[in-house]
Length: 137
Image: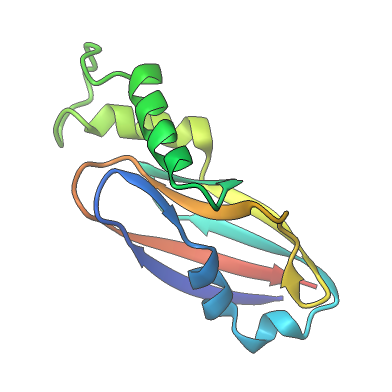
């Protein structure tokens, strides 16, 4: 088992493809694995991870617009210590989740042709997000 810490910078609310950053952090370690699992854990409660369409950027905009309808800011939240995006960010994080498990096959992430790993930033301001990446083989 091998573990790597990775920090990803967001530019504020949005969906950021981080597949390449994860692959770069893994480097040659990834290419030596015939069969295994990659676990990605996000150490935050106001962001999340997901796997989805990696080619058409309009998917990211649709996600962003849908999440605002699903978890509106104008709901009367009591947890608003850090602004109007505070509690909605926590709820969105719980809905999407903070970890992913991806198969490793023949030295590559076992993602489908159109799949990519996203950091989902639910806060308005830019953030530095910490991930723990663990390889099991």
